[in-house]
Length: 495
Image (cartoon, rainbow, N blue to C red):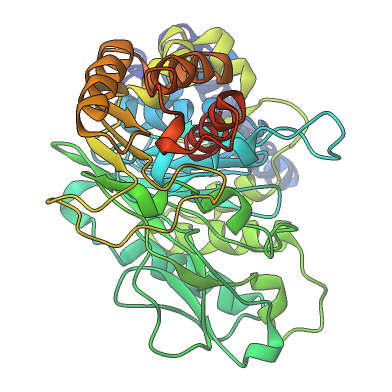
């Protein structure tokens, strides 16, 4: 076997490049043995060999090498940055890295998404998000805020261009829930956020004076903790985890300089929350802040790139990855996809190219974009405008424009309505008829497919049964009651 080939197993066609360089190195070695006999040539030969050895260690590969290089058995340390701001692309690449990288490898993946709300795999979008607020009008200066469901658990989080997402994939036997949050906290301390620390819920918080940073109570993190005991602890990073048989994924947010820091509640406060009793994971509100507002020991202006450099440094130090991969990762061209590889490391940029070139990534991306994955994964929940046995909480008063006798109850599982009742009458017999009729109209309907016209038609049909007028109120025309009741339901379900 040609010397050096054993190191190239798993690279396939790309191994030819490594093999060529190895053969060249043998020729240079042979030449050096001859030239070293002449002392005047010794220095130049050593320089030539050093340059070739450096080339052997660092090889630039085409983007098409991605599949082979990430799964190479010797690729122990891998660092990637994304060129894409599409959350579906980035989460699909992240999932692929979890599935395909060697079981004993350590992977760092950094990405920034366009504005979006990302919920956990077992969460309820009607409970965790304001779906109506995500659909901004054309008059808005911003694009629509995307709704995304990820593969990992945990709670709802808001991403935008001021939020850096970090993902670390490692062997399961070295994983702890604080390990990588502490890694990022050390990086934040080195850019001047000296008060960054990891709390008991594995979140990164800044302990500082309220005047030093914007504060807001909001459901903005993955696996949000209860309200902090001190108002000075501002959450800047939350985490979620996914464990497989041999691998562990820890991904987290990092609110570095979000322009929406004072607006997060507009997207993460559901108007249906007071009426919903749900299974699955619920987000808990925490005070949040930007890292950029909490820098106290730095003369340099805040820079996301400086933060990225420090996180890469801390990752390389934590996993003893060496200077080569660290330096190469910090010199990546962020304008095009590229990969650089050494004997035991890979550093590169990823993005849309991988979606087009890797069928599994494209398939995952399409699946995550589908309404089936977004909505039909939702655990069972009940929406009720009145207290029920499983949820005796007091409910907010209904709008004064609705009949006081109005009652709405909907039970759904995996996004499909299982039971439903809409009544407006005060008469017991009429109420029973309305209950049966509304159940016939709504049972087995797919909730997210119900539009304003659909809801109005159903409400109109139910209200028409109340012959004495909605709730016995003759003073209001039926059409007005229908409009108001349909609008109430549509607002709660984000239609």
